[in-house]
Image (cartoon, rainbow, N blue to C red; front, side, top):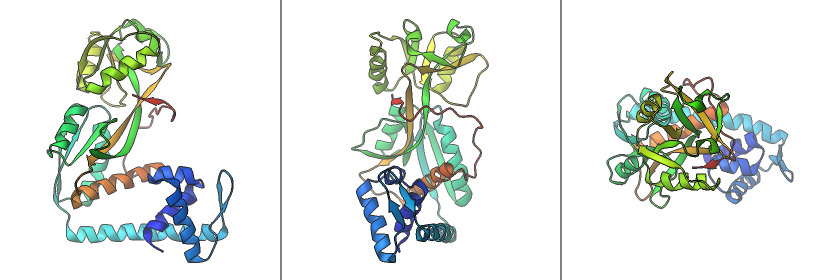
Length: 316
């Protein structure tokens, strides 16, 4: 038994569904099924009873699941101990966007630098296009940005998502309407400020085209603080990804619906060159953090209330 096969088995045992397990592992279904079948042949036991839509774990599978969890946890602990003996060190440069990204990144940095105190992290904050340009030019090792990004040049790990909202002054007429949701049609004719990323203008126009309308674009911005400031002064309504942070009592945020949109954040790196040990360790650490969040065993603090749009919400 190798550790990778055990990890695959654990995920399948937790999901009891090959499709969902493959999605969690970011791999396709056929090789995952082959791994599980190979493990059963190696051990000489049946681990799952295969149904049309889901799996049922056998007694042998249940026993292996308990042991596999122990083995994997011991392996992780051993690797961490060995890495600490080597004393991983160096400088990690990360470019990122405003909004939710800094708060996602802070969770990982706190744990990573606690484990590797000799690592220095350098952050640069700007628009999505600027963050990706720094990564492409080699001025950053990693980038934390909102999708989409060039899949031919970069690889990425999805790390979070949130809805698009309308930010407005508390004095705005729409702010006084009841509820935390706002149909897109209510924004027709309103002066709008949108993110300055080049791809956003076209997608926002396509969004309004679903209503056979054109958005009234008053300007664009690259910084979340600018969006807050403009909304506070009732200069217009800012269309921006929602963040649960940097709140102002002078603005109101309403989640845009009918039709809703969401944004996906990704940790991104250059795919045409080999990652350094430090970069790969950080990527692995983030993956472990995301897995801990799924299990509800993360060690860092998270907001009590976070709104996540339905899974089938379209991306913008």
